[in-house]
Structures are given as C-alpha cells and as structure tokens.
Amino acid sequence: MDRAHPPRSLYTWSFLGPWLLLTAAGGAMGVGLALVFDTPWLVGLALGLIAGSLAGMALFARRSQAPAAPPLPDLNVRLLRWVLRLMAIGALAYLLAGWAGVPFNRLFPWDGLGLLALCGLAELLLRRGRSFWASSAVLGGFCIPIAFNAQYYGMASPVNALYGLGLLVSGLVAGSNGFLGMLAAISMLTALFAIGEQQGIVEPVYPVGAPAQSAGLVLFWWAVYGATAWLSWLFARTLERAVHAARGQTLALAHTLQTITPDSSLEAVLAQTLAAITEQLTATRAQLWLRAPDDDTLGLRLAYQHGQLVAAEQMPSSPPPLPAAGLPAWQALVATRQPVVIDHVANDPRVVQRGLALGRGTHTLLYVPLLAGGEVTGFFSLENIETRRYSPEELELAQALVQQVTLTMQLGQLAEQSRQSAILAERNRMAREIHDTLAQGFTGIVVQLEAAEDVLGEAGPAARQHLSRARALARESLAEARRSVYALRLPALEHAPLPAALRASVEALAAAAALAVEWSVDAGWPALPVDLELDLLRIGQEAVTNVLRHAQARSIWVALKAEPERLTLEISDDGRGLDPAGPRGGLGLLGMQERAARHGGVLAVRSRPIGGTTIRCQVPRPTEPGQSDAHAGQRV
Image (tube, rainbow, N blue to C red):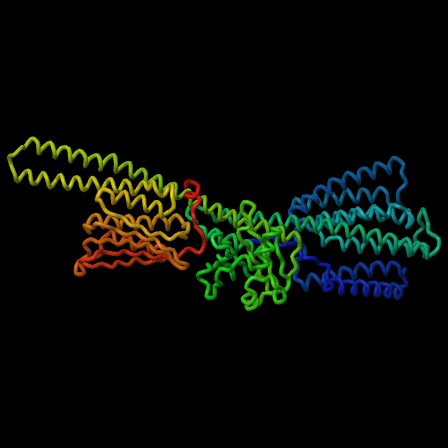
C-alpha cells in the first residue's frame, strides 16, 4: 500500500555540520589558490565557497542515498508554473522599464533577456517531466537581475530586499528543504559585494564609506534574509503537512472503498482500514477497543501487527474487559474528545494494560477517540517502540483516519441491513408462493375428498377408508404448509426481541394442540446479532414442531438463560421420548445442530422413552452488543 510520507527535513546537524565545514574549507582553499596564481582573492573566495557548498550537498546526497534529481510533488509543480508566468511578466516589465529610461546595471538588457530565456527553458523541462531541473533554472534565474542591480546600486540600496522574493519563491517551488541553497547563495553574494566595495573592485551608485558601516549593513541584510527564510520554511512546512494529511486520508479512504465489495466481510474491510492507519502513521502495533454500554466496560476487539489482523479471541493473552470508569486515559478521551499522547509508557499512569505494553517494548502510545453520533464509543491505540513526537498535523490525520473505522462499521451495518432485507424479501416471496400454491392446493384436495365421501355414501367401506386416510394426509400437509408460511414470514422477530418473538411463535404453534407452555427467561437477556437471534428462533421453532409431531406431549417448558460466557436455550416436554435404539439423525435435528455450530455452539439432546425430551442449545455470548440496525429500527 502506498504511504503518504511528509518530506523529511534536511536541516539536521548530520547535514549542516559537514556542509558548513566543507563550505568554509572550500572558501579557504579558493583564497589560497588565488594567492598562488596571483588573481584577486575575492574571486577565489567566491569560487571556493560555491565549490565547497556543492561538495557538502553532494556528500550528503551520497550518504543518504538520495536521488540526484528527485521530481517535485504535484502541488509544487503547479506552483512552479504560476511562478514561471509571474517571472516572465516581471522580466518583460523590467525590460520595458529599462527601455523607458529607468537606470539599471551595466548588463541591461541581457540580464532580463537571460531571465526570459531561463523561463522558457524551465517550461520546456516541465513539459518533459524534469521538474527538478526546471525548479533549479527558475531559482537560479530569479536572482540574476537582482544580483546585478544590487551590485550596481550598492549595499545601501533597497534593491537588496528583493532577495526576499527569491527566498519565498524557493519555499513555494522547492518546499521546506529548498530555501537553504538560496539563503546561502544570497548571503555569500551580499558579503562578497560588500568586500568588493571596500576593496575598490566594485563602484556602486550609492557607496558605503567606513568598513564598520559596511559590516553593519551586511549583518542587517543577513537578519532580513534569515527572517524571510524562516517564514518561507514555516509556510512551506505547513503546506506540506496539510498536503500529507489530505493525501493520507485520500489514500486510506480509497483503499477502504476498494475493499468494500458485495462479497466482502466487515472483518476484511476493518483489516484494510487498520492497515492503512497503521502504515500512514508508521506505528508498530494498533488496537481497536470498543465500549459495551450494558456494563460500561472496554473490550479489545481487533489488533493489527506485522501486516496481520488478529481478533481478540484469537490472541494468546487477550486482556479481559476493563471497567471504563477506572481508566484515566478513557476519562481523558471522553472529556476532551481529542487524541491523548503518552510520551513515556513506563512513567505514565494513564496507560491501559501497561504491563503488556512494556512487554512488547512500547515507548510511545497514541490514543485516538472513536466518535459516533457525537459520543465516544471506543478508542484506537497506536504503539511505537521508539520515542515519537506527533505534530498537530499528524494528530489531525490520526483523527480523520480513525473515523474511517466508524465509516467502515457503518458501511458494514448497512451492508448487513441490505443483506437481511434481501433475505426477508426472498422469504416473504417463498411464503407467498407456498400459500398460493401448496396450501391452496391441499385445501382443494381436502374439499374434493370430502365431496367424494358424500357421493360414495355408505357404499365401498374400503374406498371410504382410503379417502379418510388421504384426507388426513392432506390436512396434515396443509398444516405443515401453514407452519412453513408462518416460519418464513417471521413477523414476531421484526417487531420484538428474541424472547418475545419466540414466545409468540411457540404459543401460536402450541395453541392448535392445546399444549400448556411454561416460560423462564432471564431478566438480563442481551440484544444479539441478527443471525444469532434468527438461528435461536429457528431452533426453538423446530424443537416445538418436533414435539407436536412426535411426542404426544401435554406440556412444554421453554427457558432462556444468559450467563457471562454463554447463552442457553432449553426446551423440554413431558411426552414420548426418543427410542434409544432408533435413528436420531433426522434432518430437523441435523439442521438445529448446524445452526448452533455456526456460532460456535453445541446442541445436546437428552431423551427417555418415558419422561420426555430435553433439547439444550448453548452458544458463546457475543463479546459486544450486536443488535442489528436493520431490526433495531423496526422494533417498537
């Protein structure tokens, strides 16, 4: 996956130290060679400083394995085109002013024409994709007329202030790392012109008398250039970080949306989203914690490390749910709704699971709140094995990327809602088909059989016996068709939780057989994911249907038990039990076992020929409340 890295600053001592040493050594060597060959020492100093500076930059580029001509980012290329247009307009205005009589340096108009030529060269290089060399031509050409006129008018002239425009242009075009070369060149030119003026080599229009006055002017201009360069760096750095944050959000969102397909699962989308967040912020490990509103605890949901997504239940040492009220980091997230940075894990009491974090070698932690509907529903933790300082732009990027987890979960819920709606529509269609075809057909068969009995009268006892048997079978098939229609439509679960839906379904099935039904439902029965509710309801319906078909029972008992680790559905009857020697692998029992196994549960059957049958289904309790929005919105 592509990463949106902010440009690394070159201005560290690993670069500045050798560069300054080589620049000074180059200047000293230039002066020495000038004296040996009996040439002006000022020329040797200028050439030596330039050579030493270039050598320092080349040495750093080789040590850091940086490309010789790295292309500029797209934003800088667009800014460079605008600078080219403005430079061309400025060069034309400069030439027109000179031809109109404004006094300029002795090289006029060739300096202006040279600047126009460099603008054309830069445009040609841009069109060929050589943005680095185009920016070099622009930055070099920008200072040509300024340097010549600064030398012509002297150190006391305000023309020297125009160098500040060059520094601003370098920040716009070359970014936060581009102004140092311009600053060094301008500072050296200013000093060399001042020395040349004192030595009598240069005769400006506005000369400076005493050397002390000349030195003061040099220091003044250096201070102006330094302040301008700092402002240029600050603006360019802020712009780069803003672009980095925007590009990081765009990349993460693009990869997340690419993962969302009709066949993708929520876990797959979360894996992609967590990978994007972890890589964009260069973290070692990431964890997603969600709050359970039922008991106000925080549970670990997912973790991402070494390119793999691991669910909490698959971790060898998964932490248990933690009470939210006792976690200082959670209280800070809820109070501020802003990221919380833990600079030193070993010394900060706000760390969640500090022992585990230290065991993984974590030094810095970043907690980012997960907001949904204006409320903090969880948090996202980023671990770093090195001490790391997050800039404000990186914190904003972290907040934006973490909110994609909320987007991912909402999209997953919408997809699940769409899937459930499609299933419900298909079930209703099947129910209508059964009602309009099989049920009505069986009703017609019953009517015709009754009419045949009336026509036969007392004749043919054997025929009447066959007709009675056929009518009984038709009535039984009609009852089965109606039960199938009722089970397919499932009206109770659309408007009530599982206990109420199961009660309505069981009582409707038992009413026709005059069965007494007794209930036991735990008061703390939780809201469940739609698939689990549906499968438990199906198991209960199938168990009661088996009682009606085979048990000849008078009473049934239904119990729903909610324990911290598991959920239990138990249905017992006082009818005829299963024959231990008989087959026990019917499709109904097999279907119930498969439904329980879908959720990691088991189905147990305990039966005696006399004494009834007990069917017990036990499934693990979900780690978080999973009521589906598709049903939550319909329940009243």
